[in-house]
Length: 507
Image 1: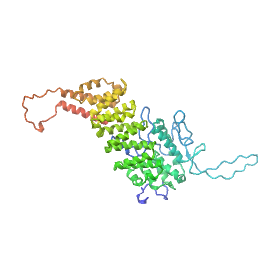
Image 2: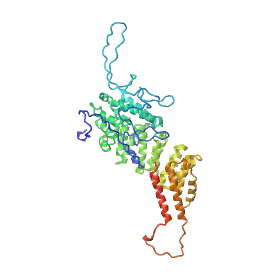
Image 3: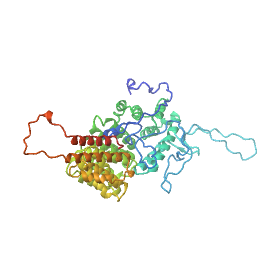
Image 4: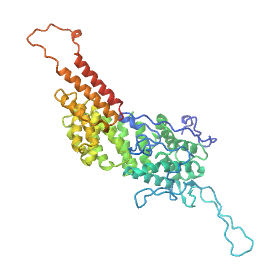
């Protein structure tokens, strides 16, 4: 690496080591409706915003990371690493409790051997220290960092397959690994396998300050300098600088899983400037790591890129593939919301057969999954003012919902809001909205009922205005004479109110 291109706060190899940096991790980027907003890099490329936090009760996991800072104390309720480096399933399918966290071995001397007689104790011959490339637990078992990372990746693959327990466990595992890696002797990373595992770990959710502290020590990890520095810059969210380093790395020349992670990071860094290249990199990531969380993340992001490019065929093909293979992923709820928003904005939603094509896409889901998708599409269509699509999707959702269920109430709200602006349906829509049980609605949907009723009333008043007498000649008018009627102005104000409520509502 050209010394002139290195950031001033990262010493080059051979220079004096800088003290470990304990700065807080950068804040997560705000969630936006724009599909490509999902690509803002923070701590890892496995999800729109990195590794997921433990979900709150009755809440779906999100894509926002929060691994603990280096040397942080793990809560007493967290599940630490096992002696074999990871939390495999027990017979019940849940993660078993584990012994104290893994640390990195320091040189040690074997204890003296027991004596067979009462003669004065004679110390045994000195024993060579254990290799510094191994990690050791308090039980005395050894495990290399490469194996620790492999265990973490196995856990993340279970998350892609739908393990909700794995989301919470991942936080504890990453916190423990951060501590173990931060305390490792620099010689550990002179093993090329461990150095590659180091890069893979921080692309899987490791805390950036820990990597920065490792890089500032001598000797540096035995791996390509661009790969090392680029990973740090990427996890810190410094996109332009990260692209200068990682942009020259050929992911196909790396081991498959690490190459897939690098391709995923490169796609994140290039998607705004070159969506076509980002799609190719995401294809490469999927090919290099099939069946992993990396493939799930790459597929999820490639769908959003296809939507941004307006590639309907790719959007439908990839969406069908995701819904069939990863519908139970811990990230699937987030994907479904973004999918609904992206589809409504695409040309396919405006076509006469848009609802039929949506139905075809959702055939891979069960009734519950289809009902939720129709509700999401109906709400997204209301946000975009596409009332015909919103009404059609709400009707489909109501057909799939149990009578008097909360989802049936939601479907009725979206159907009523869509029909409130239709001259031939506003009265029936208003009556249906008045019968909705608001105690079962979210605050945003309850506010939508108020706005829709106001709109229906304004449309009714406009409909009751007397028609002009066609027999009486009308005086010529100018543009200044054409003013909206008070009723139509009220209707327009009500529609604006609906639009503002929808945009302000939680997505």
